Image (cartoon, rainbow, N blue to C red; front, side, top):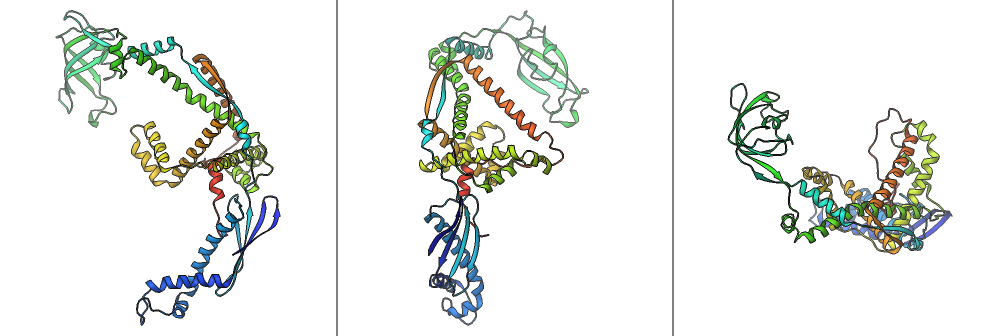
Length: 473
């Protein structure tokens, strides 16, 4: 195979590939041998069909199959040999081809530009740690204790009030008739929370132990017996006991009930929990700073085909007129996105960053935990949508790249208080909100076109995928 690079104009170039007819004939012979072992033709024993017969019977189909395979294999090899990473799919133009002929074709390629990533190690960013004051930890523990009250039984002459825990047996009827699920024993209600049926709790205020009380309440919309929905039921309640809430003592026993070794250990765990609540958001701010610095790195030329593709994504759902008005803004946004993706991808390749199947599964599991009760739906979605898994892989890939950039870059370490953390995050939120308003301003005149499903933006993963695509025109 002979490979030459011609007509170089910036990032555009032609890669000419020549394969002599002897090599092509050897590929054809291999294919005929493969067919001979499996084909059954009348009048010939298996494996003994002459090549001339096979050529007459299958010649065109065999040549087409061999040509496709040779083009695919050699075009990829040609680009790799010349160290060319295409931005999108090269166009393939067959010049000479046919049985018992040389094969010559030209790949018209727009190459990904060379980018410099060494300067990423000189990027400066703020890295925050939040110092949690002891008072904040104590406050959080008191909130936990408040939400886990204990109760102490009172004497039989004490009346129930809001906040008390009342234990009842009840038997219910609708229009004097029993129904499925109309009877229950030892049902506990905390008065005032109204968690059983709307208006049920307040009718028990003032009852005493061993009282009997008829309570009326409307059955809810989600009641299993559909014919009884919204009907008024009478509950004949027997009051078994009444308990007053008592303040939970915050001590080692309380801490152990929450899974800690003792109170000191619980305070350490709660302090870490509060810190972690801010850590993820502050880490994201650090990564946003890094991305802003990456945007300042100069890239001499960005492939026009990638810019056009990104503009199409940005203008999805817009009318042709509106898209035309916003084109200059979209062009700048597209260039920034593509440039950032190119730089991150190059950094990832130079540092041999890959994403394992275990990491993909871990990310899927994380999403399952975020959607309790919908695990099967989420799992089915990923199993039936390979593109969703590819997008997830791209997200993990980019996250690993940014984490490594963060490790290598120059961190300006800052220890801040919880209040300072909240102020920083609020300012960042307001800035992002204003930025969203700007984007809405661009699209405010969008009228009747339905919103299409948005494709992922041109980032590291997308650029990496494009760099590997080679196909016939």
